[in-house]
Image 1: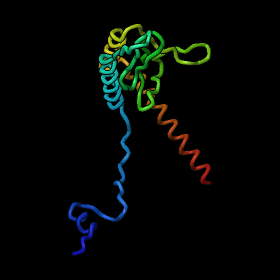
Image 2: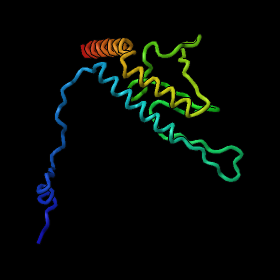
Image 3: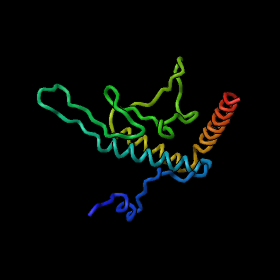
Amino acid sequence: MTINANEIAALYNGQTNRLKKPEEKYQRKTVADMTKRIVEDINKTIHALENYSEVSKEGHVQPIRHLPENPMAKLVQNGFQVKVGYGDKNEAIPGFFDKDEKGNLELPKFWTAEDAVAYCNRMKTLIQDGEVDGQFDQMLASYRKRSQAGTEALLAVAA
């Protein structure tokens, strides 16, 4: 008896043709979408800060510091740095942070994880209460402008 693996795969919705995802219709982002995403990221960051640990190993003068993966906080010398931003790249929200003379963002740093968690909780409350909706509108307008510029650049190259 000869077994055909493709026939067996077909019993379980397997196919030999290329698997193509159905095209998803673009849905415009809203302030509510942004708020939801940022609150989720802040919650992940709070969880990571609450589970921060210093592991002491024999032979090390200082403990090894480890902060679980999170979207907004990182370890810096002697403490923590938190950047409340938007998206996969944690993009800065307009007006959230001051800039130094070189144009770099001046991000807040904290001595303890508890202080960083308190800051995150306060920022989350402000975002949920709609205090930064105007800044989110600015960000969405910037996205639209960049998208339109990119489309125009592609059309110029194609011409």
